Length: 196
Length: 276
Image (cartoon, rainbow over all chains, first blue to last red; front, side):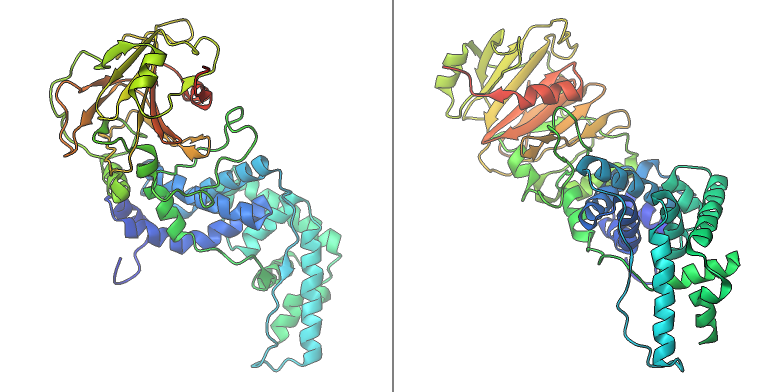
């Protein structure tokens, strides 16, 4: 595949026409997202790798059933989610895992003081602890929406429910997070970040 | 308030650590080329273990391990997966690597009526005529085949265990019998395992033992043997029903009958050398 990046559906059309590179491009494009979705559901890095790989293979063999006027991502993520659930069931792995903050370098181009940076990190850790303390379902919907930046269609495909249900589940998860974390406006890192 | 919380979560998302994403491109392509279709777990067959671990057990060459008789190749012109014509092309082009490919086109000759099983003999007689160790099912009712044949190709011999139709194994219109299992020894020679793809059947690559097999289910497809040059052997072209092909040790086995995939796998997993 050369030149400008092709959109997903064009890559699907090319893969169906026998262009192996086109499907490899789709794998390369979405392997991180697929892996992370699988990780959220399977709760284990090894199981997530199995699930993501199986999903891409199954998706290839099911390409003829993909509606080419529909977005590719929700279709793929639905397969990924199914594979991740299968992995979780078949390997008896626990699904609840603790998300952690990345060990990022200290800010170098910010006017933020070291104390300010430490404060922001503490606040992020507090919020993440609250997310981790949620039930699996609540935590997953939060992660899909805010950490993986999935849209409602993609979340609905993963969660096997209508988009309206996604909205209500997200709303309830936010309410529980707010209640559980006891977050006042001043406790939220975004406020600090907005002042950076 | 909720909006601020959402902003905070979005910001937090950029700082959350996920495990490093593995590069799946190569393993996915290898698996597809090798026919490692992940079929999920299969209780009773898998004995509780996970079957879908393709990245762990990708064979060097599915074609060499599963479909490699000595001088002849089994060519199955069959049905697959409900793929569209375009998808068939894609699958064919991917699978053709490593000598494992699909083909399309007309049936290469008139359909024969015979099974071309060879000469009738006994289990002991068959064992004396081939160099590989015969395998028979240990399931009740299948330990003693109703008929045993030895034929060729390949030149190293091909043994067929035939079972008459029964309640458990109904008569298949393609063979007129209940079940038969063909065994021959692969030599590592490259072999083309091809299928004429259509939209009506199901293809699976189930785990059997430590490897994988090929299961073709659906309307009858055409199978025939080819010579060392890949030319169809006359009089071997016939319709076949549901088929499972797999490798056990050095022996390639082919099971055909009007049965389900699960039943075929149960039979396949029971195959062992006959008691003396």
